[in-house]
Amino acid sequence: MWILPVTRRELVDLITPRHGGDVRGAVEENRLSFDIVNVDVMAALWPARPGEFGRLPAAIIVPEGSQRDTLAWLSTYVRDFRPFTAYCRVVERPIAEQFLKGPSAPYLQGNEGICSGLILGEALTHARGRASILDLPATAFSATLSHAISRTFALTGGLVPFDTIARLWTQAREITGQNGLGVPPNMILSVWAVALGMPVHSTQTRTLFEPANVLAAAWSEITKVGEVRDPVWHSLVEGYPDLERMRGLLEMPREQRVQMIDGALRLLVSSRRDADERRSFLAGYFTSMLGPGTLDHADILAPVSSLLPTAYLWYGLCAGVNVRGDALPVGNPLARRIARNLTIPDRLVDRPRCDVALEELVMHGLGDNPLRLTAKAGRLDIDILPGVTTSVRWPPQESPNQDDLRRGWEVDVQNLLVEMEEITMRWHHLTERLRDVLRMAESDRQPPSRRKRGGKS
Image (cartoon, rainbow, N blue to C red; front, side, top):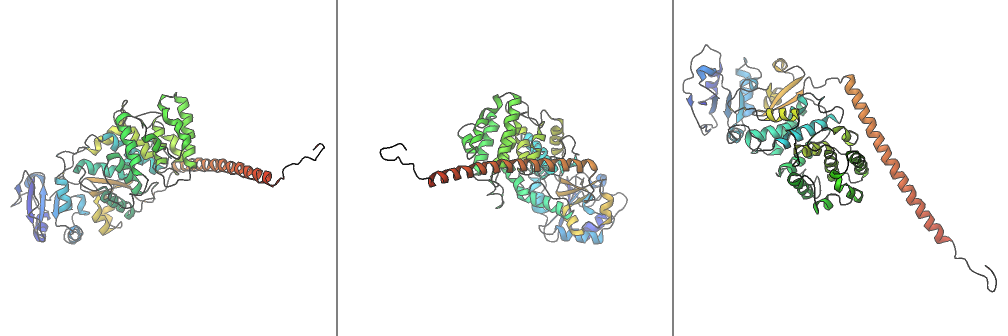
């Protein structure tokens, strides 16, 4: 890797197109350090000798808090490269040092199943059950928050807090006018916190489910023995006595499992405990038992996905770990491809592969004509962090086709039918209770019968 300290004026001279020639002052470093970066000095980086690679740096490291100011200055004095971050990264020093401390090659630390399972589960969540996993485009997976978390985890080894990734990812979606999500980011972060046993630095997520240690303990049991054992099981189904019979679900015949899971899902959606995350966890966990280690039965969750928003995430997570046999991504080609893409090398000093970086997009907005020229058909790839690319629909307001509308209509009808059935069941239950109360009141009002003295009653 090659590095050169530059001022703004020197950077303009460096970037100005000219024929060949080496870059005077650039030196090769085996171990990069950004100590030279200060208020007036930036660091230009190349992966190879600038005379061979090209005079335009692959990355520019700037002082903390100066990224947007630097990009605004570049947009004024460097007009041949627009958007600039499609050709050269502009990274603040603290972020650059985090990525520099990461593994030499992207590495998921044995969490391929967790990462691919949550990416697939989140894609199904955002699709709201309107398409099977095989019908979703590849961009549906790279558009997820779970993909951004997994990619950052692979590149940095977990040095970047999850809530920072979520904030940048949300900002990319908001500025490009994407549609609303089926599940908010804080709930996705909570599932990730349980999956990796990592704290989420957000006050919003700390009270999502109560108690959180029940789900953490249940997930620990699943990863170790493939099922939830006592006493964790009793804590998991506490308040849902009818779910105790699900304890031996794996030992039941498949047909019986389908019936049992269908009944359990109906019970969970009819519960009045809306803030109880155990409902979504149990829905995903039970459904995963139909085909452990696979996502072959995702359609079963479609009717309840709007009422149990993270059920698909838990379903994908359970499919990602199966101690009794193959799991994602071992038995699923799509999951294998996702895991492969997450670990594609992309160093800080490599040329960007995105259409634009988030900070430049925020600065210029969507009306920049060069941005429209660099975007791929139907999508825009945005770097929210170096090498961490999220895909968004482009143009943002794309009209859905008839098949999408029909699938959405069918799912909405199914959801309404489920809700109507549960309301009907509750109405019958309340009717019976009212009848019992009226019978008791009637019996209390009737005087006891008395016998006449010396004669028959």
